[in-house]
Length: 119
Ligand code: FES
Ligand code: FES
Image (cartoon, protein in one colour):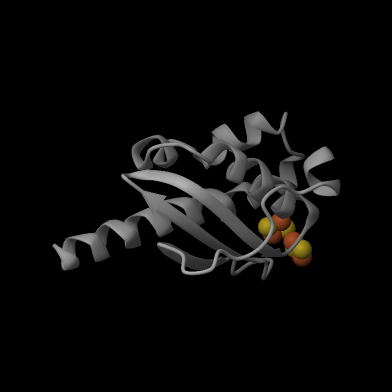
């Protein structure tokens, strides 16, 4: 509830290292996630959610969990870890944590792919 009323790290990073938009085809909610990555670490993270309260709360807490972490650590922030950090979600809202977890994984995968291309 606290993360829904006072979501952290809202916005879009200027000149992000990685940016991704993910959507849930069932409910239509979407999340735009941008990351600043330096030396394999997330040094800044911002997001915009167009979605339900649970999507906002899960994105907010996921952004706090990812801030300052190495990319391998961020990849471990999955749906379960996010839901647990929030103290649980009502059953029908469990899927809402997929947005943030999927966006984190997607952004890092894209970043790694483009880093390979640059190398
Ligand atoms: Fe509409 Fe999540 S289903 S906001
Ligand atoms: Fe779809 Fe919450 S209802 S993300």
